[in-house]
Image (cartoon, rainbow, N blue to C red):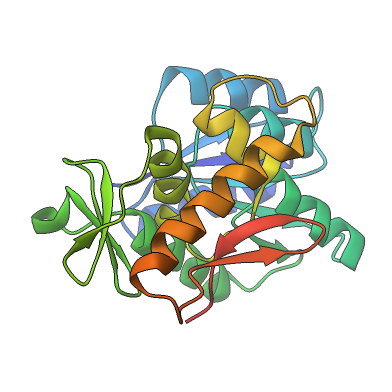
Length: 226
């Protein structure tokens, strides 16, 4: 059973979500503060996180920032604030999706299913990751297009792997640097830009007419829409 962390300080909403997820064979775990959520995330592994923004202790945004420094677990934010500025900040911080409160439970279940379907590979393909005509071989650490290897470096491979694992997610430069380098991002855009440029060049050397990585201006990078 897939384990889902519910980070919600409203006891009634938390209990409702727990009951709902159990009905669909998920294993819910409740956290009532940002601090408790980070503790649980450090102690256990989860298939997905439902994250409220307004929390006691550390806010949902702070939880998301700290989580993205070490994990790519899918996060669906539950928020009462859906203005454009808030949405952009959520994407920059690494949210995979968001849902406005009050939400329809069927829509929430559908969004959960979509995120889990994207991140859980088929058993026969556990060493392969595919997007468009790219096959990422996790054994040889390279991308293959039309039978040709791209010749990626270790860091280039890790960046592309992260982007392909979550092809609809926009990764900020902060997300990419801290996930791939495992260090604090100090605002050096050039490091990420150079690596993205090299990945694009190596992929386009094999398939020159295809755009694989899209720049989302003001936010970061994602795999191109298909």
